[in-house]
Image (cartoon, rainbow, N blue to C red):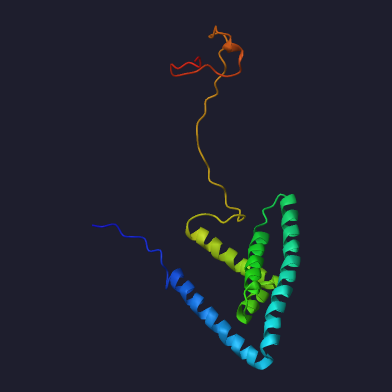
Length: 184
């Protein structure tokens, strides 16, 4: 009887989703360029694309410093700035999307700039990860679950100062055991 192989792919798989995104997003962006270019004209459309990149960069810089200062306060209080790190990652993604020419990517990047959206995403990702930890039999961090107990035995060894005649007996280390010696 052969062992069952663990199935890692759920649904269509991440590779298929990425392939669809890499094909669909540029097609949508081209269609939007054509549509907006027809309404506004070529030059205003190009100015609008550059303007969204400049304004988005300024907003990301401002919000990035705010997130960084909150993370610093959290560290100063002895906490771990998990939410701030998550928000920082969202801001990096927003920046990449805003710098990518296109109206769809600009819209998604602008949505990621909204603090309530980032907070909602954080709550959702946190709940998902906690559910996976519980399913794996672990307690989520901060849930009051006890850390694992590590059992062991120890023996306290007192230094034997009288047994050594080479002058090494004055050291605070115990004498070697098992028939080996420290001498070269």
